[in-house]
Length: 272
Ligand SMILES: Cc1cc2nc3c(=O)[nH]c(=O)nc-3n(C[C@H](O)[C@H](O)[C@H](O)COP(=O)(O)O)c2cc1C
Image 1 (cartoon, helix red, strand yellow):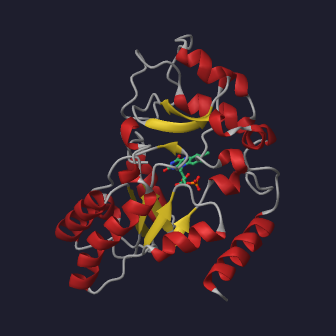
Image 2 (cartoon, rainbow, N blue to C red; image 1 turned 180 degrees about the vertical axis):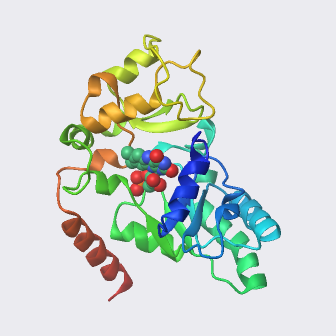
């Protein structure tokens, strides 16, 4: 996340350690290619929420570093966690993923053609079934990034309490919050968030100094502590981020089972 105070360190270390790919969002990663050297193997994949942002990144990267994104993730307003939209845009039809994908594909196609390089567009946010994958690929996406579905798998390393918040959630429990980061986020409502809304929470200190935009003097709670507490199962002091489909989970299953279901559904839609 570009907004992290240790973003540079994370990028440098990832590239040095030869990770396959950096998927970078929460701000525009305008200078990401500058960390590459001639021996780098790491692919760079920015996350955008508009065709305009995709164009800016392609232009900047090409002119300053002679580099184009290896792929682009387009994250729509149904995603979990922090969202790259203003609160009013989240429910605005104009900003739905089905509108954003063709817009980004169109902008990216100009660079693909000019520089003879493929830039796959990957759709994220609210993709839940094989049918969803099929539909979004019809609009030009070459792949999808999914998270909410994978939270309620055996392999997900979050606590069982975290997974259970998804299974127990009703549709109306999945809501938009204002995060200390200064962006809207999507989470499952609970007593902790209700207390925040009543203005009852106060951070005692700033343990990690994680986000550039967070002001410890004015923020209502520490976001990193709240998310880590939830991850470990302590919902008295935290809450779960979740995509808009989180309430649809009914059980915990294996990734294999989930993947089989997705592939079977997708193949059926493709007539295979
Ligand atoms: C619990 C949770 C935590 C997330 N945390 C991050 C994060 O730290 N950084 C980020 O860029 N995206 C984060 N996301 C967004 C996902 O990476 C993903 O793009 C999005 O949720 C996909 O939509 P889906 O959950 O509907 O499949 C998070 C999503 C969830 C559900």
